[in-house]
Length: 458
Image 1: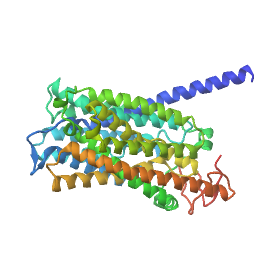
Image 2: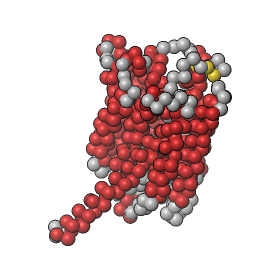
Image 3: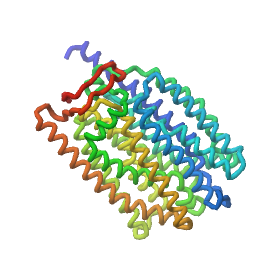
Image 4: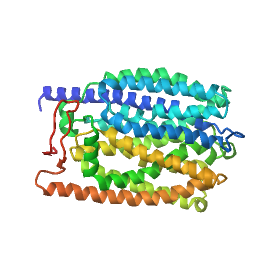
């Protein structure tokens, strides 16, 4: 290899590193700030208050998640069809509406102020898909997605810790605390949104390795779902329970764990999530080094199956193992976020690349979230109506135990299906991972019209 070739390779590697730091860092900070607009109220307990006979804290979660759930339903169309030139405007308007709703939560009379949180959830439900659309379809998307996904793991605990600090240290009331934090998040998130619009578009090498990502209309979405219906139904079903479990942990952790009685400081949640974040980042970075898309899919499904079984083991043996609070919280966070983030980041990026699907990751993730948050609303309403006085720790442990078993079976079955489907495509003689869509696609952002044909997976 000549000196010139070595120099070119070094420059390319440096360029990739700088791009990952720029794009991945901006995405990580952006969604962390989305959490700052959405989740700080979960640090409050609202003791002694009720919402027309319902527990006030439960009501705040139900109302906000109802808006979030409706936003996911709308987002199936909005995110999958959104053009790149519309992303920044969408981000700025969304975060402005979110902050306004938090101001209304602080100033409206109680308990009517709870309804303001509906609009907070409604305005932020599509943010993950919109931010991720800046990152997908690149050779380094695995690393970018891992960085962005870790914002969920680290921001959940940080939002609670920040909320507790603002209330206890700065003496801001639990009703004005969310708006206080959001006032700092709003301008920062708007600036980061502008920075992401300056990212370079995917290169020819990116398209060859990960396929071109285009907007999907209703016929395109239906065609993809019909073609992969068995595995998508399994994954949507499993992620319904995972999303419910994660929401319960995020919104009611201060009720599941009595912070004062357990002796945990306000920053314990952030420290535990930071360690979990580092572990998941290392795992995802290792997976990003594997070039074979089908191998990554199988490794991910093996990983989430093990994580689900570990979740069940911790729940079913909670009393026998006598785990300290910190150890229990660490294991719950590690297992739950590993499963959740695998599908929010790497899985569908590699799924699209493996089967050369003409579409975008946003369609899969927003649909996954819609199903999951619908389940969260139903579970919270069910608990409040039929078991309002149930112990939160017992309720959460029982649910996580059974959820782990159900999800492990679904993930294992999904792995079997994907391997069979991959081999079937290979047997057709068109090449490993070939995929044919049964309908014509409209012209996407790249300006190409694609009809039913077998596309070679390089």
